[in-house]
Image (cartoon, rainbow, N blue to C red):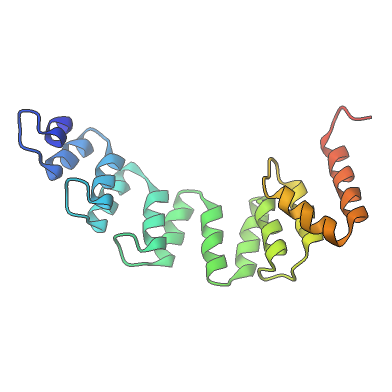
Amino acid sequence: IAFMYRHGVAVEVDGEKCAEYLAKADKFKEAAKMYRRGFLVERNGRKAVEYYAPGKAWDEIGSMYRDGDGVERDLKAAIKYFTDAKNPREVAKIYLEQNDFAKAREIYTAEKLWSEIGEMYRLGLGVPKNPMRALEYYVKAPNNGAFIRAYAEAAAIDREKTLALLKSAYKSRCHNCR
């Protein structure tokens, strides 16, 4: 029925009824997106949040409050929803934005988000800027694309120390190495 109201098949196009039937079919995110983007309905952040909630789309609600997307910007609410979504990376980003570097680092450490701690050292966010220390954290992180940038910066400072660190990390990860 939602399809019919969305595309005007045998009925007039009606975005509100389309969203209503999507929600009845447990397609809460689709209904919420209509209100969030203003697709076939007037853009309405509060209505989007109402539709996201039953679908437990906490990340979506958190990002709306973080960005002020259709709702008043509220970082406390964003932290609550990102926490409910079990998304510590986004919670830590909010603390970084508020210059609460200690809290961000506490979260990154607890969650073993090593590349993010590496970024803090690489950029000097709440810690002294230190490319070598950044590289130590990047090496700990699995599949880290930022590693190459960190390597280049660290190697420019101390090539021998950088290579020693990389060899050590390689040996600790490589179980078949001799």
